[in-house]
Image 1 (cartoon, helix red, strand yellow):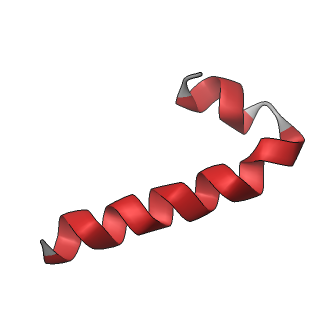
Image 2: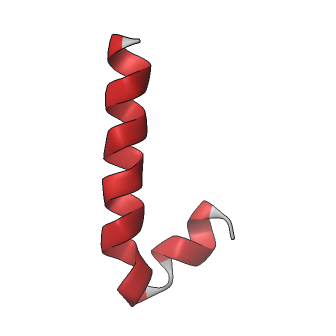
Length: 30
């Protein structure tokens, strides 16, 4: 499942956002 699919799926939007934020934090501070 890719990002666009997640963004187009309302129930998955929140979990996608959380995963993205975790990834971004890891990327920024790694």
